[in-house]
Image (cartoon, rainbow, N blue to C red; front, side, top):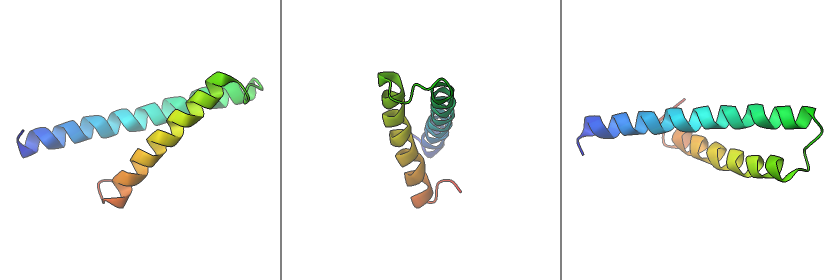
Length: 66
């Protein structure tokens, strides 16, 4: 894989992770407004949000994003 292909793949992955994180946050906000913070769906979303948050933080640690 060429450096350009690697950069393109990284940028696609970063965009996907950031987008998923934002969508999960919106879904969680909606469930919270409905009083469903103890639901299985909310808890699953929380786990996914934490995973994506960790990935985004690693990008920062390694200087890949600001």
